Amino acid sequence: MTNKELCSAAVDAIKNAYAPYSGYKVGAALLTKSGKVYTGCNIENASYSPTVCAERTAVFKAVSDGERDFLKIAVAGGKNGEIAGEFPPCGVCRQVMSEFCSADFEVLVVKGENSFTEYKLSEILPYSFNPDHLNKV
Image (cartoon, rainbow, N blue to C red; front, side):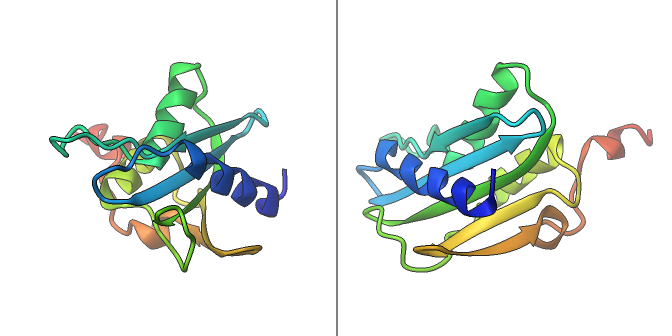
């Protein structure tokens, strides 16, 4: 799957977002090393703290299906689902990615139609706390 196709899948996932409070709709598409794509959308809640982001939805769907090896994720979003620039993963999503992904894991952030910026997880989450730290005890 090309980066462009993965970004398109993230944009398509926005359609399923449930964001009645913020109006910000986000979609994500996670590519596994086995070639499967898991999509996710953000799902808000009236009490806010149970809200889950699109990136975590995609990762948790994949993990719950037994997948643990990921290549890259594409993320797209914006107010009312309109993409008008980059909408990068939040800190919690970055931390979840660090649990399952290597430092060179690719994060594609959609900027607009047929446009995205590619980051490495290490660039957007420097000095991450990950499972390796627990093995140093």
